[in-house]
Length: 279
Image (cartoon, rainbow, N blue to C red; front, top):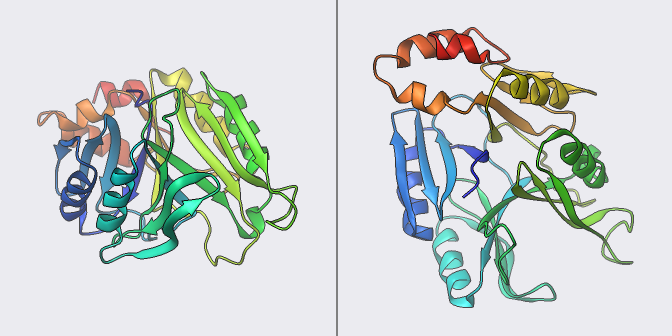
């Protein structure tokens, strides 16, 4: 499974509960690493980072996760579990695009689009979906071009516009693309949702060397993005990213190295591969 990019979900004070909840809901998973601040889990081979501290924002549906299932019974089971203590954004039903679909926000605020249909060519079960709303509505197609031009091993797999009467016909109803072979989706919405992209959900990019860190860091802050701290940045669309060395998890899991790496990392904005490696 390709984990060169994976999501980070900020769930303050409840990451252990959330990890158990997602493993129980989706099955086929495991806890990879755990400490009081960060837990990493695998679901169907895909990495998810659960962060218990840091951003003060909370997740919202501007970034949801499309969950691909071939069996309607799986979709129904996910819906039943995820809706407990959560809320339904689109009810479980038959839709033109899927025989069984629902959009639900779970009790931790994380949103899931439960889709029944054929697997994608990457065999990727969970696909982050970026919804461009408010002053960012209408920028989905531009963003897809921006991301696929910047990231290696990328391609645009399809952009579907709204039909007359659905929304602005220049807006994207659904787009699918790959960045570093990681399947991602996007859409526009002109509705007054009252939310936009926040740092409670970010995308972590593993980089093999400093050149790759520099490329993605400089590329993503170009045109109106900005640096944050400790490898975090926000791009010009408001999407948050963490640009990190691919061995950072290994270094942070080494009891002898952890404190030195953490001390070095806390002083950085853009991460310096060699300084963290030699800390």
